[in-house]
Length: 493
Ligand SMILES: [Zn+2]
Image (tube, rainbow, N blue to C red; front, side, top):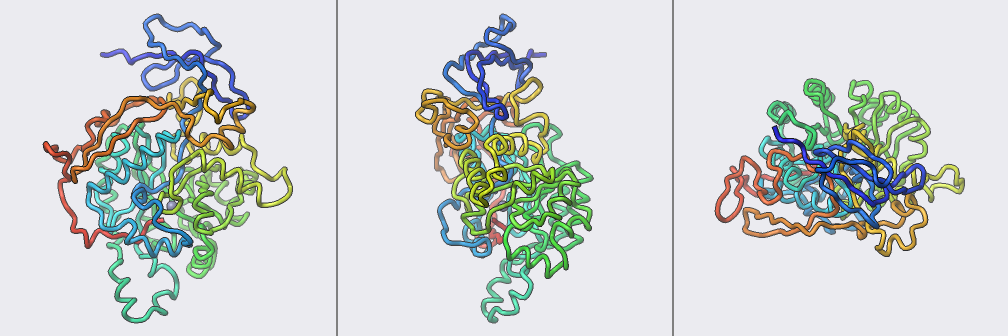
Protein backbone atom coordinates (compact mmCIF):
# COMPACT_ATOMS: atom_id res chain seq x y z
CA UNK A 1 0.00 0.00 0.00
CA UNK A 2 1.31 3.44 -0.90
CA UNK A 3 1.97 5.88 1.90
CA UNK A 4 -0.08 9.07 1.37
CA UNK A 5 2.13 11.99 0.37
CA UNK A 6 3.04 14.38 3.14
CA UNK A 7 3.80 18.06 2.89
CA UNK A 8 4.68 20.75 5.35
CA UNK A 9 3.83 24.36 4.52
CA UNK A 10 6.15 26.77 6.29
CA UNK A 11 6.43 30.51 6.53
CA UNK A 12 2.87 31.59 5.77
CA UNK A 13 0.22 33.40 7.78
CA UNK A 14 -3.07 31.65 8.53
CA UNK A 15 -6.19 33.79 8.56
CA UNK A 16 -8.22 33.62 11.76
CA UNK A 17 -11.39 35.34 10.58
CA UNK A 18 -13.04 35.68 13.97
CA UNK A 19 -9.97 37.14 15.66
CA UNK A 20 -9.07 39.47 12.76
CA UNK A 21 -5.55 38.08 12.95
CA UNK A 22 -3.17 36.19 10.67
CA UNK A 23 -0.36 34.67 12.71
CA UNK A 24 2.50 32.71 11.23
CA UNK A 25 1.91 28.97 11.40
CA UNK A 26 3.16 25.78 9.80
CA UNK A 27 0.75 23.23 8.41
CA UNK A 28 1.44 19.49 8.05
CA UNK A 29 -0.66 17.68 5.45
CA UNK A 30 -0.99 13.98 4.79
CA UNK A 31 -2.76 13.06 1.59
CA UNK A 32 -5.61 15.56 1.41
CA UNK A 33 -5.97 16.21 5.13
CA UNK A 34 -4.42 18.66 7.56
CA UNK A 35 -2.95 16.56 10.36
CA UNK A 36 -1.13 19.19 12.42
CA UNK A 37 -0.67 22.93 12.74
CA UNK A 38 1.81 24.71 14.93
CA UNK A 39 4.17 27.58 15.50
CA UNK A 40 6.85 28.31 12.88
CA UNK A 41 9.50 25.62 12.95
CA UNK A 42 7.00 22.99 14.09
CA UNK A 43 8.52 19.51 14.08
CA UNK A 44 7.74 17.48 11.01
CA UNK A 45 8.93 14.12 9.67
CA UNK A 46 12.14 14.33 7.66
CA UNK A 47 10.74 12.82 4.48
CA UNK A 48 8.01 15.42 3.92
CA UNK A 49 7.88 17.76 0.94
CA UNK A 50 8.51 21.36 1.93
CA UNK A 51 6.20 24.07 0.56
CA UNK A 52 7.25 27.65 1.20
CA UNK A 53 4.49 30.13 1.96
CA UNK A 54 6.68 33.15 2.73
CA UNK A 55 4.73 36.40 2.26
CA UNK A 56 1.51 34.42 1.77
CA UNK A 57 -1.82 34.67 3.56
CA UNK A 58 -3.62 31.33 3.69
CA UNK A 59 -7.35 30.85 4.05
CA UNK A 60 -9.63 27.85 3.47
CA UNK A 61 -11.11 27.72 -0.01
CA UNK A 62 -14.30 29.77 -0.19
CA UNK A 63 -17.47 27.72 -0.70
CA UNK A 64 -20.14 28.77 -3.15
CA UNK A 65 -23.47 27.73 -1.60
CA UNK A 66 -25.56 28.30 -4.73
CA UNK A 67 -24.76 28.32 -8.41
CA UNK A 68 -25.94 26.84 -11.71
CA UNK A 69 -23.42 25.08 -13.93
CA UNK A 70 -25.71 25.33 -16.96
CA UNK A 71 -25.67 29.14 -16.66
CA UNK A 72 -21.97 29.68 -17.27
CA UNK A 73 -22.31 30.17 -21.01
CA UNK A 74 -24.89 32.91 -20.38
CA UNK A 75 -22.79 35.54 -18.64
CA UNK A 76 -23.48 39.06 -19.87
CA UNK A 77 -26.54 38.08 -21.89
CA UNK A 78 -28.99 40.26 -20.03
CA UNK A 79 -29.58 43.47 -18.12
CA UNK A 80 -32.62 45.06 -16.50
CA UNK A 81 -34.23 41.64 -16.07
CA UNK A 82 -36.35 40.66 -13.12
CA UNK A 83 -36.23 37.02 -12.06
CA UNK A 84 -39.40 36.44 -14.05
CA UNK A 85 -37.90 37.94 -17.21
CA UNK A 86 -34.82 35.79 -16.67
CA UNK A 87 -37.01 32.68 -16.40
CA UNK A 88 -38.80 33.72 -19.57
CA UNK A 89 -35.42 34.04 -21.30
CA UNK A 90 -34.21 30.70 -19.88
CA UNK A 91 -34.95 28.63 -23.00
CA UNK A 92 -32.68 30.70 -25.24
CA UNK A 93 -29.99 31.38 -22.65
CA UNK A 94 -29.49 27.77 -21.58
CA UNK A 95 -31.33 25.77 -24.22
CA UNK A 96 -30.13 23.75 -27.18
CA UNK A 97 -27.48 21.94 -25.18
CA UNK A 98 -25.64 18.86 -26.38
CA UNK A 99 -24.05 16.60 -23.81
CA UNK A 100 -20.67 18.12 -24.58
CA UNK A 101 -22.11 21.60 -23.89
CA UNK A 102 -23.34 20.44 -20.49
CA UNK A 103 -19.83 19.29 -19.65
CA UNK A 104 -18.17 22.41 -21.02
CA UNK A 105 -20.45 24.92 -19.27
CA UNK A 106 -19.88 23.19 -15.93
CA UNK A 107 -16.13 22.93 -16.46
CA UNK A 108 -15.89 26.61 -17.37
CA UNK A 109 -17.66 27.64 -14.16
CA UNK A 110 -15.45 25.36 -12.08
CA UNK A 111 -12.35 27.03 -13.54
CA UNK A 112 -13.69 30.50 -12.82
CA UNK A 113 -14.44 29.63 -9.21
CA UNK A 114 -11.06 27.98 -8.68
CA UNK A 115 -9.28 30.99 -10.17
CA UNK A 116 -11.15 33.22 -7.71
CA UNK A 117 -10.45 31.44 -4.44
CA UNK A 118 -13.43 29.08 -4.32
CA UNK A 119 -12.82 25.34 -4.02
CA UNK A 120 -16.32 23.86 -3.52
CA UNK A 121 -19.82 24.65 -4.72
CA UNK A 122 -23.47 23.57 -4.68
CA UNK A 123 -24.51 23.33 -8.33
CA UNK A 124 -28.19 23.18 -9.30
CA UNK A 125 -28.02 22.05 -12.90
CA UNK A 126 -30.91 21.90 -15.35
CA UNK A 127 -31.70 19.73 -18.36
CA UNK A 128 -34.75 19.86 -20.58
CA UNK A 129 -37.23 18.24 -20.63
CA UNK A 130 -35.92 15.78 -18.01
CA UNK A 131 -32.72 15.12 -16.08
CA UNK A 132 -30.59 12.36 -17.63
CA UNK A 133 -28.00 10.09 -16.08
CA UNK A 134 -25.58 11.00 -18.89
CA UNK A 135 -26.08 14.75 -18.43
CA UNK A 136 -25.66 14.60 -14.66
CA UNK A 137 -22.60 12.36 -14.98
CA UNK A 138 -21.05 14.84 -17.42
CA UNK A 139 -21.61 17.65 -14.92
CA UNK A 140 -20.11 15.67 -12.02
CA UNK A 141 -17.15 14.64 -14.15
CA UNK A 142 -16.47 18.25 -15.14
CA UNK A 143 -15.88 19.06 -11.46
CA UNK A 144 -13.64 16.04 -10.98
CA UNK A 145 -11.60 16.99 -14.02
CA UNK A 146 -11.30 20.61 -12.92
CA UNK A 147 -10.21 19.50 -9.44
CA UNK A 148 -13.09 21.19 -7.63
CA UNK A 149 -15.35 19.79 -4.95
CA UNK A 150 -19.06 20.03 -5.70
CA UNK A 151 -22.51 18.95 -4.74
CA UNK A 152 -24.39 18.38 -7.98
CA UNK A 153 -28.17 18.59 -7.81
CA UNK A 154 -30.50 18.08 -10.79
CA UNK A 155 -32.82 21.10 -10.82
CA UNK A 156 -36.25 19.72 -11.58
CA UNK A 157 -39.89 20.76 -11.75
CA UNK A 158 -43.18 19.71 -13.28
CA UNK A 159 -44.47 23.11 -14.36
CA UNK A 160 -42.76 25.53 -16.68
CA UNK A 161 -42.57 29.13 -15.48
CA UNK A 162 -45.61 29.99 -17.62
CA UNK A 163 -47.73 27.27 -16.03
CA UNK A 164 -46.49 27.93 -12.50
CA UNK A 165 -47.70 31.53 -12.15
CA UNK A 166 -51.40 31.39 -11.27
CA UNK A 167 -53.52 32.98 -14.04
CA UNK A 168 -50.60 33.79 -16.36
CA UNK A 169 -51.60 31.45 -19.21
CA UNK A 170 -55.20 32.72 -19.00
CA UNK A 171 -54.14 36.19 -20.12
CA UNK A 172 -51.95 34.98 -23.00
CA UNK A 173 -53.35 35.27 -26.53
CA UNK A 174 -53.93 31.88 -28.19
CA UNK A 175 -50.81 32.05 -30.36
CA UNK A 176 -48.50 32.85 -27.46
CA UNK A 177 -50.11 30.16 -25.31
CA UNK A 178 -49.33 27.65 -28.05
CA UNK A 179 -45.74 28.91 -28.26
CA UNK A 180 -45.02 28.43 -24.56
CA UNK A 181 -46.58 24.96 -24.58
CA UNK A 182 -43.33 23.87 -26.23
CA UNK A 183 -41.59 24.48 -22.94
CA UNK A 184 -43.63 21.88 -21.07
CA UNK A 185 -41.42 19.71 -18.88
CA UNK A 186 -41.38 15.91 -18.82
CA UNK A 187 -43.64 14.02 -16.43
CA UNK A 188 -42.69 14.10 -12.74
CA UNK A 189 -42.59 10.31 -12.47
CA UNK A 190 -40.02 10.15 -15.25
CA UNK A 191 -37.87 12.83 -13.56
CA UNK A 192 -38.00 10.95 -10.25
CA UNK A 193 -37.11 7.68 -11.99
CA UNK A 194 -34.11 9.26 -13.75
CA UNK A 195 -32.86 10.79 -10.51
CA UNK A 196 -33.31 7.49 -8.65
CA UNK A 197 -31.24 5.71 -11.30
CA UNK A 198 -28.53 8.38 -11.13
CA UNK A 199 -28.39 8.25 -7.33
CA UNK A 200 -28.33 4.47 -7.40
CA UNK A 201 -25.26 4.32 -9.62
CA UNK A 202 -23.45 7.35 -8.18
CA UNK A 203 -19.95 6.36 -6.98
CA UNK A 204 -19.80 5.49 -3.27
CA UNK A 205 -16.88 7.88 -2.70
CA UNK A 206 -18.61 11.22 -2.27
CA UNK A 207 -15.82 13.16 -0.61
CA UNK A 208 -15.06 15.11 -3.76
CA UNK A 209 -18.30 15.24 -5.73
CA UNK A 210 -21.60 14.38 -4.07
CA UNK A 211 -25.17 14.23 -5.39
CA UNK A 212 -28.25 16.10 -4.14
CA UNK A 213 -31.73 17.01 -5.43
CA UNK A 214 -33.20 20.40 -6.30
CA UNK A 215 -36.95 20.73 -6.80
CA UNK A 216 -36.42 24.18 -8.27
CA UNK A 217 -39.20 26.39 -6.89
CA UNK A 218 -42.04 24.99 -4.72
CA UNK A 219 -44.95 26.22 -6.85
CA UNK A 220 -43.28 24.83 -9.99
CA UNK A 221 -43.76 21.37 -8.47
CA UNK A 222 -46.81 19.39 -7.37
CA UNK A 223 -46.94 18.38 -3.73
CA UNK A 224 -46.57 14.73 -4.72
CA UNK A 225 -43.46 15.54 -6.74
CA UNK A 226 -41.94 17.41 -3.79
CA UNK A 227 -42.73 14.49 -1.50
CA UNK A 228 -41.14 12.17 -4.07
CA UNK A 229 -37.95 14.24 -4.02
CA UNK A 230 -37.93 14.19 -0.21
CA UNK A 231 -38.34 10.41 -0.21
CA UNK A 232 -35.45 10.01 -2.65
CA UNK A 233 -33.32 12.28 -0.47
CA UNK A 234 -34.09 10.08 2.54
CA UNK A 235 -33.50 6.84 0.62
CA UNK A 236 -30.06 7.94 -0.56
CA UNK A 237 -29.03 10.27 2.29
CA UNK A 238 -28.58 13.35 0.11
CA UNK A 239 -29.40 17.06 0.36
CA UNK A 240 -32.35 19.07 -0.94
CA UNK A 241 -32.08 22.60 -2.34
CA UNK A 242 -34.86 24.89 -3.57
CA UNK A 243 -35.42 28.54 -4.49
CA UNK A 244 -37.74 29.80 -1.77
CA UNK A 245 -39.34 33.25 -1.51
CA UNK A 246 -36.72 34.73 -3.83
CA UNK A 247 -38.93 37.36 -5.52
CA UNK A 248 -42.16 39.11 -4.61
CA UNK A 249 -43.88 37.28 -7.47
CA UNK A 250 -42.82 33.98 -5.92
CA UNK A 251 -44.16 35.03 -2.54
CA UNK A 252 -47.54 36.01 -3.98
CA UNK A 253 -47.72 32.88 -6.15
CA UNK A 254 -46.97 30.81 -3.07
CA UNK A 255 -49.64 32.51 -0.99
CA UNK A 256 -52.19 32.11 -3.80
CA UNK A 257 -51.30 28.45 -4.33
CA UNK A 258 -50.98 27.31 -0.72
CA UNK A 259 -52.72 29.95 1.38
CA UNK A 260 -49.51 30.17 3.40
CA UNK A 261 -45.85 30.94 2.83
CA UNK A 262 -43.76 28.51 0.79
CA UNK A 263 -41.69 27.81 3.90
CA UNK A 264 -44.77 26.88 5.94
CA UNK A 265 -45.93 24.68 3.08
CA UNK A 266 -42.56 22.92 2.81
CA UNK A 267 -42.72 22.22 6.52
CA UNK A 268 -46.20 20.69 6.13
CA UNK A 269 -44.90 18.49 3.28
CA UNK A 270 -42.08 17.20 5.51
CA UNK A 271 -39.26 18.54 3.36
CA UNK A 272 -37.44 20.63 5.93
CA UNK A 273 -34.44 19.26 7.79
CA UNK A 274 -30.72 19.75 8.29
CA UNK A 275 -30.19 18.62 4.68
CA UNK A 276 -32.45 21.36 3.26
CA UNK A 277 -31.04 24.55 1.76
CA UNK A 278 -33.17 27.56 0.87
CA UNK A 279 -31.75 29.54 -2.01
CA UNK A 280 -32.14 33.31 -1.49
CA UNK A 281 -34.98 33.61 1.05
CA UNK A 282 -35.11 37.35 0.34
CA UNK A 283 -38.73 37.53 1.47
CA UNK A 284 -38.70 35.13 4.41
CA UNK A 285 -40.83 36.35 7.30
CA UNK A 286 -39.41 36.14 10.80
CA UNK A 287 -41.72 33.16 11.37
CA UNK A 288 -40.29 31.47 8.26
CA UNK A 289 -36.76 32.06 9.56
CA UNK A 290 -37.69 30.54 12.91
CA UNK A 291 -39.23 27.48 11.21
CA UNK A 292 -36.10 26.93 9.09
CA UNK A 293 -33.82 27.39 12.11
CA UNK A 294 -35.88 24.91 14.12
CA UNK A 295 -35.32 22.29 11.42
CA UNK A 296 -31.58 23.00 11.21
CA UNK A 297 -31.90 24.11 7.57
CA UNK A 298 -29.58 26.53 5.75
CA UNK A 299 -30.01 29.61 3.57
CA UNK A 300 -27.76 30.32 0.59
CA UNK A 301 -27.47 34.13 0.39
CA UNK A 302 -26.73 35.51 -3.10
CA UNK A 303 -26.56 39.27 -2.78
CA UNK A 304 -25.23 39.91 -6.31
CA UNK A 305 -28.07 38.03 -7.95
CA UNK A 306 -30.66 39.55 -5.63
CA UNK A 307 -29.59 43.04 -6.68
CA UNK A 308 -29.03 42.26 -10.37
CA UNK A 309 -32.58 40.83 -10.65
CA UNK A 310 -34.10 43.50 -8.43
CA UNK A 311 -35.37 40.95 -5.93
CA UNK A 312 -34.39 42.95 -2.86
CA UNK A 313 -32.05 42.70 0.10
CA UNK A 314 -32.19 39.61 2.28
CA UNK A 315 -32.41 40.12 6.05
CA UNK A 316 -29.37 38.07 7.03
CA UNK A 317 -29.21 39.68 10.48
CA UNK A 318 -32.75 38.43 11.11
CA UNK A 319 -31.73 34.91 10.05
CA UNK A 320 -28.59 34.81 12.19
CA UNK A 321 -30.48 36.23 15.16
CA UNK A 322 -32.84 33.23 14.95
CA UNK A 323 -29.99 30.73 14.79
CA UNK A 324 -30.41 29.97 11.08
CA UNK A 325 -27.30 28.78 9.24
CA UNK A 326 -26.34 31.08 6.36
CA UNK A 327 -23.96 30.33 3.50
CA UNK A 328 -22.99 32.65 0.65
CA UNK A 329 -23.25 32.01 -3.07
CA UNK A 330 -22.88 33.73 -6.40
CA UNK A 331 -25.97 32.24 -8.12
CA UNK A 332 -25.55 31.41 -11.81
CA UNK A 333 -23.45 33.44 -14.22
CA UNK A 334 -26.66 33.90 -16.24
CA UNK A 335 -28.03 36.13 -13.48
CA UNK A 336 -24.99 37.53 -11.71
CA UNK A 337 -22.51 37.41 -14.60
CA UNK A 338 -19.55 36.05 -12.66
CA UNK A 339 -18.73 33.46 -10.04
CA UNK A 340 -16.50 35.54 -7.77
CA UNK A 341 -16.96 34.58 -4.14
CA UNK A 342 -14.76 37.46 -2.95
CA UNK A 343 -17.23 39.80 -4.63
CA UNK A 344 -20.14 37.93 -3.06
CA UNK A 345 -18.62 38.40 0.40
CA UNK A 346 -18.08 42.09 -0.23
CA UNK A 347 -21.66 42.50 -1.46
CA UNK A 348 -23.05 40.51 1.48
CA UNK A 349 -21.36 42.96 3.80
CA UNK A 350 -22.48 46.01 1.85
CA UNK A 351 -26.15 45.04 1.41
CA UNK A 352 -26.40 44.49 5.13
CA UNK A 353 -25.06 47.96 5.78
CA UNK A 354 -27.58 49.78 3.58
CA UNK A 355 -30.62 48.31 5.32
CA UNK A 356 -30.74 50.68 8.25
CA UNK A 357 -28.81 53.17 10.32
CA UNK A 358 -28.25 50.95 13.38
CA UNK A 359 -24.67 49.76 13.00
CA UNK A 360 -25.24 47.01 15.59
CA UNK A 361 -27.56 45.36 13.05
CA UNK A 362 -25.01 45.39 10.25
CA UNK A 363 -23.14 42.19 9.42
CA UNK A 364 -19.52 42.20 10.52
CA UNK A 365 -16.80 41.06 8.17
CA UNK A 366 -16.13 38.04 10.40
CA UNK A 367 -19.79 37.02 10.11
CA UNK A 368 -19.60 37.31 6.33
CA UNK A 369 -16.33 35.35 6.16
CA UNK A 370 -17.79 32.69 8.46
CA UNK A 371 -20.85 32.39 6.22
CA UNK A 372 -18.74 31.97 3.05
CA UNK A 373 -16.68 29.21 4.66
CA UNK A 374 -18.24 27.36 7.61
CA UNK A 375 -21.83 28.34 6.80
CA UNK A 376 -21.58 27.25 3.16
CA UNK A 377 -19.79 24.03 4.18
CA UNK A 378 -22.78 23.10 6.33
CA UNK A 379 -25.19 23.87 3.49
CA UNK A 380 -23.20 21.53 1.22
CA UNK A 381 -23.14 18.77 3.81
CA UNK A 382 -19.37 19.12 4.29
CA UNK A 383 -19.60 20.45 7.84
CA UNK A 384 -16.51 19.57 9.87
CA UNK A 385 -14.47 18.79 6.75
CA UNK A 386 -14.39 22.09 4.85
CA UNK A 387 -14.37 25.78 5.71
CA UNK A 388 -11.53 25.82 8.28
CA UNK A 389 -7.80 25.36 8.34
CA UNK A 390 -7.44 23.04 11.30
CA UNK A 391 -6.31 19.46 11.97
CA UNK A 392 -8.83 16.98 10.59
CA UNK A 393 -10.06 19.34 7.86
CA UNK A 394 -9.41 18.94 4.16
CA UNK A 395 -6.35 20.85 2.99
CA UNK A 396 -8.23 23.05 0.52
CA UNK A 397 -6.00 26.08 0.97
CA UNK A 398 -5.91 29.35 -0.95
CA UNK A 399 -2.70 31.37 -0.99
CA UNK A 400 -2.86 35.15 -1.30
CA UNK A 401 0.19 37.23 -2.16
CA UNK A 402 0.88 39.68 0.65
CA UNK A 403 3.05 41.69 -1.74
CA UNK A 404 0.02 42.31 -3.97
CA UNK A 405 -1.44 45.80 -3.90
CA UNK A 406 -4.60 44.46 -2.22
CA UNK A 407 -2.51 43.75 0.88
CA UNK A 408 -0.39 46.89 0.98
CA UNK A 409 -0.53 47.55 3.81
CA UNK A 410 -1.82 44.60 5.79
CA UNK A 411 -4.04 46.27 8.36
CA UNK A 412 -6.85 43.84 9.22
CA UNK A 413 -6.87 40.50 7.37
CA UNK A 414 -10.56 39.75 7.93
CA UNK A 415 -11.74 43.16 6.79
CA UNK A 416 -9.40 43.00 3.81
CA UNK A 417 -10.33 39.49 2.66
CA UNK A 418 -14.00 40.55 2.66
CA UNK A 419 -13.78 44.17 1.52
CA UNK A 420 -10.53 44.45 -0.46
CA UNK A 421 -9.60 41.12 -2.02
CA UNK A 422 -11.11 40.45 -5.44
CA UNK A 423 -9.23 37.31 -6.44
CA UNK A 424 -6.34 39.13 -8.10
CA UNK A 425 -3.91 38.44 -5.24
CA UNK A 426 -4.29 34.69 -5.60
CA UNK A 427 -1.10 32.81 -6.25
CA UNK A 428 -1.58 30.86 -9.43
CA UNK A 429 0.17 27.67 -10.29
CA UNK A 430 1.97 27.69 -13.57
CA UNK A 431 0.79 24.23 -14.54
CA UNK A 432 -1.81 24.38 -17.22
CA UNK A 433 -4.05 21.88 -18.87
CA UNK A 434 -6.07 21.69 -21.98
CA UNK A 435 -9.66 20.69 -22.53
CA UNK A 436 -10.56 19.47 -25.96
CA UNK A 437 -14.24 19.61 -26.69
CA UNK A 438 -16.11 17.64 -29.28
CA UNK A 439 -16.09 20.71 -31.47
CA UNK A 440 -12.31 20.75 -31.75
CA UNK A 441 -12.07 23.94 -29.74
CA UNK A 442 -9.45 24.25 -27.07
CA UNK A 443 -9.67 25.84 -23.67
CA UNK A 444 -6.50 26.41 -21.72
CA UNK A 445 -6.28 27.50 -18.15
CA UNK A 446 -3.94 27.82 -15.24
CA UNK A 447 -5.25 26.60 -11.95
CA UNK A 448 -5.13 29.16 -9.18
CA UNK A 449 -3.77 28.74 -5.68
CA UNK A 450 -3.06 25.41 -4.17
CA UNK A 451 -5.38 22.95 -2.60
CA UNK A 452 -5.58 19.27 -2.01
CA UNK A 453 -6.98 16.93 -4.58
CA UNK A 454 -8.57 13.75 -3.40
CA UNK A 455 -9.12 12.88 -7.02
CA UNK A 456 -12.33 11.66 -8.52
CA UNK A 457 -12.59 8.86 -11.00
CA UNK A 458 -10.49 10.78 -13.47
CA UNK A 459 -8.23 12.82 -11.24
CA UNK A 460 -6.02 14.07 -14.03
CA UNK A 461 -6.76 17.49 -15.41
CA UNK A 462 -5.21 16.57 -18.71
CA UNK A 463 -7.72 13.84 -19.54
CA UNK A 464 -10.94 15.76 -19.55
CA UNK A 465 -13.33 13.32 -21.24
CA UNK A 466 -16.21 12.06 -19.11
CA UNK A 467 -15.81 8.31 -18.64
CA UNK A 468 -18.77 7.45 -20.81
CA UNK A 469 -17.42 9.55 -23.65
CA UNK A 470 -15.36 7.94 -26.31
CA UNK A 471 -11.88 9.23 -26.73
CA UNK A 472 -11.00 9.99 -30.29
CA UNK A 473 -7.94 11.45 -31.83
CA UNK A 474 -9.80 14.69 -32.38
CA UNK A 475 -10.99 15.01 -28.78
CA UNK A 476 -13.98 13.89 -26.70
CA UNK A 477 -17.32 12.92 -28.13
CA UNK A 478 -20.46 12.36 -26.07
CA UNK A 479 -22.14 8.97 -26.47
CA UNK A 480 -25.40 10.43 -27.66
CA UNK A 481 -26.51 13.58 -29.39
CA UNK A 482 -29.72 15.34 -28.55
CA UNK A 483 -31.40 17.28 -31.33
CA UNK A 484 -30.79 20.95 -30.68
CA UNK A 485 -34.43 21.84 -31.08
CA UNK A 486 -35.55 19.77 -28.07
CA UNK A 487 -32.82 20.61 -25.60
CA UNK A 488 -34.40 23.70 -24.15
CA UNK A 489 -35.07 24.63 -20.59
CA UNK A 490 -37.23 27.12 -18.78
CA UNK A 491 -35.82 26.20 -15.38
CA UNK A 492 -32.75 28.31 -15.12
CA UNK A 493 -32.39 31.04 -12.62
ZN1 LIG B 1 -30.57 29.90 -8.44
